[in-house]
Image (cartoon, rainbow over all chains, first blue to last red; front, side, top):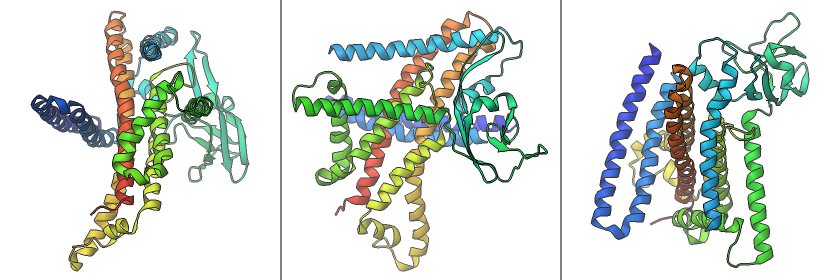
Length: 67
Length: 353
């Protein structure tokens, strides 16, 4: 039972990460479409934010793994 | 340009070889035993640390492994250094035994004369395990690369880069121009450049080495071990503490503009914030790398769960794709760790407004 609960918890964490990183990607696309010259800067900022959000989601995965 | 192409091909072949060889190795061992394949045990065995470096299992069940030295310290027996071959398969040696099941699985315990395990005082285990050997090998690779880089500069002077310099110099300049200077300022960045460069290349080399399954120094799960990432985060934490200016400390203990009755609550909050940043660094790197290893191992064990050869091409294609993603994650995690370290050090050392 703990195994299934841990899996469900990890699933919720992935939902959060998916929504968050999806929104970052979306706004990054909009921004690049508006101003293609700033594309590299926007891409760098997007990757950094994605890594940070993924870090938070992986907190939850680690807790699920431990349980 | 030619060196760059060579390096790209090298990485691609490493990845392809990794995918193919992982499945090839396991099939040799599986034909002998008739036991059911336990995927989670297979995965945990490959990602956790061990006192021997298992290479493969021959058809008659014999293990071929690299037996690493065990260094244990006990109050009764003192310091003991011996090969872990003496502790293989549950044998006992000089009052030490390697636990194979139960809570203390994988740890060396001391057994007294009547066979009773002393569970309270475990011996101090300073062995050179698989992770330690992987780290040392990464350190040797780093030293060789950068010492030759330094020597080529002292011989040729500042000139058009050729050879190893053309590969490493852009990365070093990238760390300096995009990570160190924006966060630490033009006047203070030189003090912290050695640390940032070391952390970046240490994490990068260890991540990349963890992706290649063999020969033995490669394929050790170093950065996916929470003790290793804890130490890296602790190094950043210590550097922040020892280089913090008075403004930084004042912000923690008595942030300006906060009414006095709120200060007792602010102090624990600030201290937790101070500790949470390196903690996040630690967990981010650990979880990203570990998750990558687990996914690749799960995809390979699909072949053994389904026990059919038709699954193999699909599985290997997935594994190659995941390995490419893992390559990106390796670089990215090294970059993010270094960037955030520089950011935190910058917040503590520079004074704004």
